[in-house]
Image (cartoon, rainbow, N blue to C red; front, side):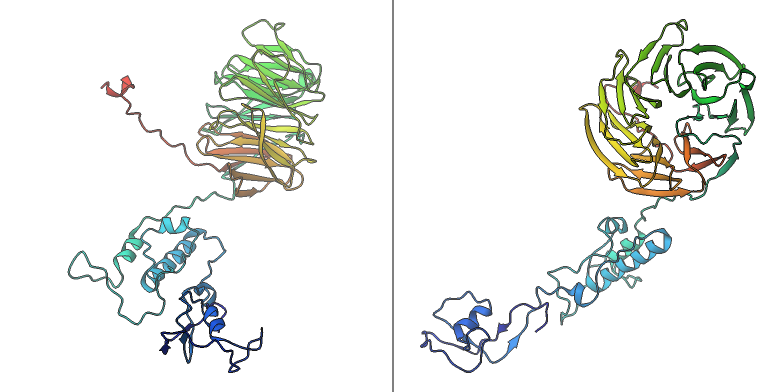
Length: 487
């Protein structure tokens, strides 16, 4: 008897109307008790009839209703992922065979792909059926196609487009004297499509439209170096520059002149964050200075809470909360009026520089830890509760969310030196990009949200296409929208 078969079915040879004497016979031995009685034989056959009627037979016919044909005929699904045109063609061919041979009735290749590839044989269909299969009625009298209507629809159904991310950067720029320092932020990309980078004591501007390079300033005459740069989110011509001496300078990039200088820190200012006219700076002196650039230089607020250097600052998309990370392994959340953090997170065991607010989900904050931590963690700042985390296997240097999809990118240092694109909330890796030979310490996103630029201690800037183009929002047809009816 086959391993996939159930209990045998007896062919009915004689039916007794009255019960016969129940005497054990020695016609056939049983491993359990040495005798094989008709009642025991009937119970093994799965019979549920009345004990007044007994069935005797002369042979056994196995039933295969519960047999697993995928095990017997190697119909197990393939575990390899189907990437590229060749994988799609093989999957279409398998679905076509299922339609013609097994009657699977697959008419959309996209739906069959979501089911995980190869579909199972329907349980109610007999694999060995000794009758002519009934043909489905055709829409027209004379069909020249050798396949059924379902297969014709399958072959003409639109294929699910697979996303392809280039593994190589589309542009590489030399960045001599780009510092290999985890606590600095030396690259930023403005919404006017101008990239700024701090190289030693100088600040350079690169136009993505014209590829023109301009040196904005040189601090070597002052005996100072650049430790952070940050574009204003309100004006395309205002750039903040943090220095090693603790100064924060404001520059007009169009006029190429310095408009203000603030000396509020006692040590280097390695992190900057804009919120309209509010400018926040984090320093090695453990303080965060928040000021309105329209007020006199001596008017500012000092936020205290960190025990070591502040290396990460980011404002939330609604401009109501500020997230800060420090070398004390702490992640703090502040509001505009508080002088102390309103939320504290201490799950990381290394410095927290990588911070990013989700533009799609209100209150969702992501943070990454350094070499001793290597985790990306997610927080619900509305409730103050941790959500989920993923171990990356290397130092997390930067995080940035996609502007159009629920994805984010992370750059890493020791020891992988890679760039990873993730899906959220599944936390599945979309692609792994390599090319830098040192820690990928710097990250900035283009204004259209499609490209990123990464910088590393190998003194190069690499440009990557990682995210999809922005989707156009559908026009609202609500009756409350007064402008939809104006011509």
